[in-house]
Amino acid sequence: MAKAMVTIERQIVDDQNPDASFLEQEGMGFEDRLAAYRNGDFSFVGVRAVATIKTPYGHDFIESKLTSPGLWGIESDSGETYFNEVFAEERAVLIGMLDAIDGYEIAA
Image (cartoon, rainbow, N blue to C red; front, side, top):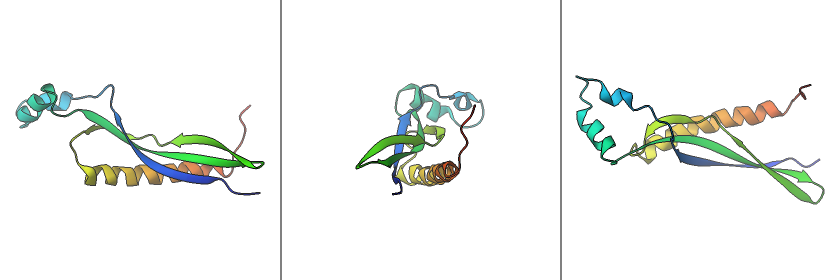
């Protein structure tokens, strides 16, 4: 039987429910950052890895997706280097998830 084909891509998604309370801590030097957040200069996002799995089915493929949990609450202006570091970690988690599928048990 042919093996499934997997591609993995990075997703950066708006964090719909961010916790920015750490910016409100007094005496921590976050005043400028809090002002920038309130001004809309940056937002919070999540970075996750998404696998597109093409499973052979006859002469065709069935496509499904599997998504890593993601890391959330990342400042949107953190930069590509940091986003790529987080993606590498999420990709490793996702590959572990894919490896776990090799042996499975159908729940009753």
